Image (cartoon, rainbow, N blue to C red; front, side, top):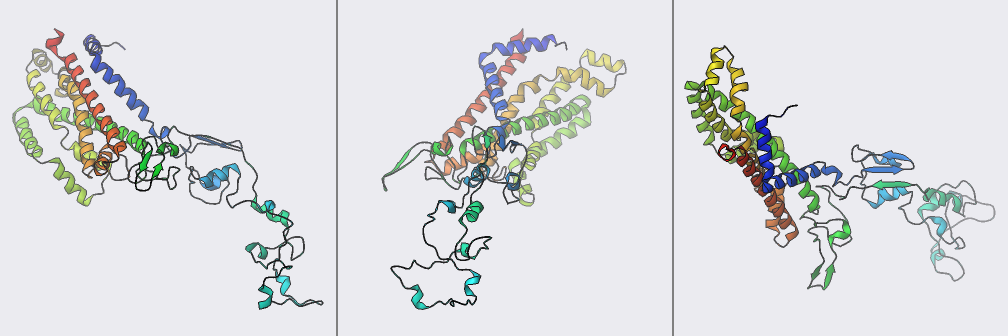
Length: 439
């Protein structure tokens, strides 16, 4: 595929801008790494092998029955009960075979209540008094179990032990680097603190107690006010913000190019009516539209994406309209019309390629605007519903819990660095497409 010489020169000029090109590389690497966030932060193992059978919990949903359990629901892979299940250990306590076999025991069965020739079994108040030579009378749940062999008053120790103990199993687990996702709430903590667990040791003066770092539980940036992993929510939130910003910029650019090119090429009444409608629609604040629609529609990412797209095209449409108004009077456009070329073909092949300079130049700034819109709405609790991860929601938590600097500081750094690098990229593209600088 032959690359246009002008595009090649613009790319070379962009790469010579070290600040812009370095920002582009760093941001692209971050986005590519965090795109498969499920393989970085997840409560499900990537690979699980039990007795030679391979499972892929990160891709497929399994029930506890698939691993030899009894429940039809998906197991909690981080729970001790699941680890005991796949390892073959019993979580019901030590087996009965470890008890002292020489210890005298008295068991009560149904045969004990039948009449016998030698004596009649009877229970009285005196039978419960402590005797020095007679062992105490005890009744347990095991005393009512059916025995296959042995006397009715002597339990079969080998049979009971085989019921409790389980066969040892071989297993192997490949975990993601972070064993938590954006919504998992840990019920138990080794550090003794589940909610707002700090990633460093803290000392409580009132009780003279030292709380261990959340690193002992695998929370490398601590937990939020609900006990969820901050690093996992930050990674997922960064991915959602980037995808949302890019998608909003792409759809806004396509709609803006369609409407702006139509107004600029045909002009006249089409341009006049289009401009008046655009001005009326642009005067309506997007926040009011969002509040009105959210009052009777279920909030979701798609709804937010649709609402923001209602006005995201207006800036690009204005630039494309101005370019089409200028280029439609050029000689090569008039020559194409004289040759009978259709209007759509003239717009697509002759005018649009020469009018894309403002589109490409402002694209990074459109991504920045999309990310800021999502973060702002999430900060105001008008964005994606909980428990969806969001940078704006983390900022709101940091504002509420100012003592939890492990929430506010990393989130602010990630957002600031992302927006700064997008700004550098936009400036580099603008300089590369500037005709005066290229001259």
